Length: 331
Image (cartoon, rainbow, N blue to C red; front, side):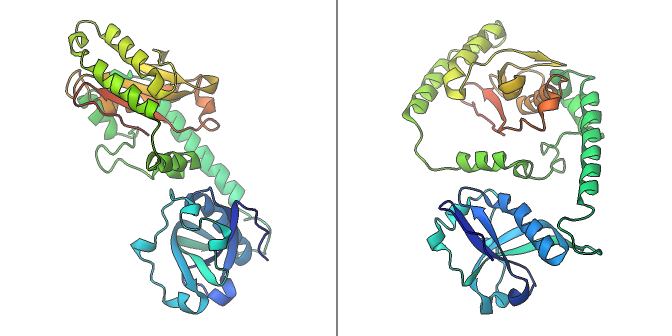
């Protein structure tokens, strides 16, 4: 029986690809304000309880197909429900949900049948999860020990960065192309919400336009201080960006790193890190690589490592290039 829904929740009929719609369809109750990635664990849990089958690597497709037609339904790219897409973008309210349809069709990458008696939870899930966390933690600790051997600026130098990327302690920033991993939205729902807001077409506050215009005007005067007085240049940049970035940027050191500016959050966690160059090619390293190296060292610091599990946030790396070539990279 479907759970009663409140105004901000809806109940959707779900079918796993190739399953019998009359015998194996099930439903899930989800929040309208959530994104489709949030639904994955619920689908996995409900399906396991009903079928004793674990499913992994889910891809969700919009069905909205009558029961008798779902067997011929084609899972096309146009029907794919991106994990960062909001539920309400498809079903704005409960009145838009037709209970006579299969709303979501799921294509799992793999299935695993549990050969044991039916229980309320997967019998090996806890031990498998604990083993995964232990291996993940050991990998993190080994990586942190390795990066502490050099500073972020030294590690970002082209020769040193190439050596790091060819070894076991590489970073997944897509350089080279094969050094990339799963999309960041899979690590925590907050990243999906951040990307959704980033792609929003909602009007921008006029004050943001004004602060941006003021910064562009100020940035034209920075060339004279590129080599002669970088500290004065950095302070000018930090103070001019406070209103745009939402806080006071300061210089703060950690093990092997002192970025051009940081903004700290609760428990001294770093929520913004900024590296500045006047032009691409000045200095001894690519600013985007140096920003990534700085990120690794700030969050790998002994004082903040304990918070990486509990204080996951929408992190921003700002690479400022002045003036005409200025751009900002956000993560």
